[in-house]
Length: 138
Length: 138
DNA sequence: CCCTAGATTGGAATGAATCAAGTTTAGAGA
DNA sequence: TCTCTAAACTTGATTCATTCCAATCTAGGG
Figure (tube, each protein chain N blue to C red):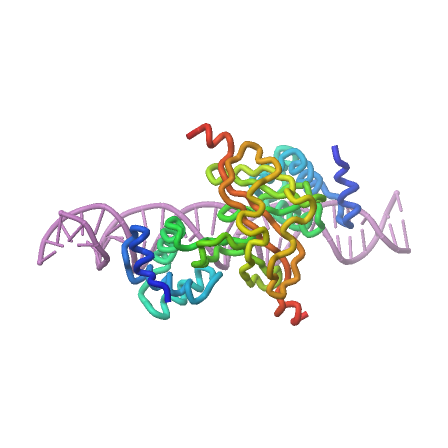
């Protein structure tokens, strides 16, 4: 198991029970939405407020310990895998998310053909499709 | 100007004033959010309800006449450019969206390295950065 | 021209996310 | 180890995009 306490300290964030619980939940369950994080955290720390979870998720996201992903039409989801720039496949039918390694090695599409003067710092790729389970269910 | 009436008929959709007004608004203003669409439509047709706009936007999206885009953390936006698969640059600071041609010709990243059994039908690319205006404003 | 499925209206409801004010606590400094 | 304060957390209310619902209207086929 990763040393979440050390992660927090490295990011100059205070080590609190809610934060450790959120990190543990995300470590065990990638791609969960906020409600699920709340449920997972409360399984361990029943007294944590939903507001605390929102605050923690924002703090962790800003610190770069967690990545927020929000496919169109869905609620925000979070994952703790942040070091690499991997992408996601999203099932149109059930919303399941899976990780996809970056096809072009490192930063694939980071060079837009015409950037309109924008200074681009990230290229986010979302693959839309249907997951195996939903294909079967049809 | 595009013949919006013909577009609607081609999609087997009834030709109504709200629909024509929405198509015209999107034709003139790419990447606008729902509230702006409502304002633009009402400039011409003051009596259109917000619910009608939501319904129209959904119908047009399902018919493929309009594309819905929703960068993480923002409200839904719509554009009428749908034939090609172009992508978008989004300004982190002001939310401005600009079009970007697909760098790799046709369907760039459509071949994920490992698709986990998903049947992928679309690859969506969002470039995040800062627009020229916000760079200046700093 | 008539009729009906489909479209629109107006109003109420949902739900993710944020705001606000007061209380607790982590952890740096004495 | 003790104190103190900024950061974190709690409780409760609020916002706002979006959807639901029942009643009314109308596009366009027959």
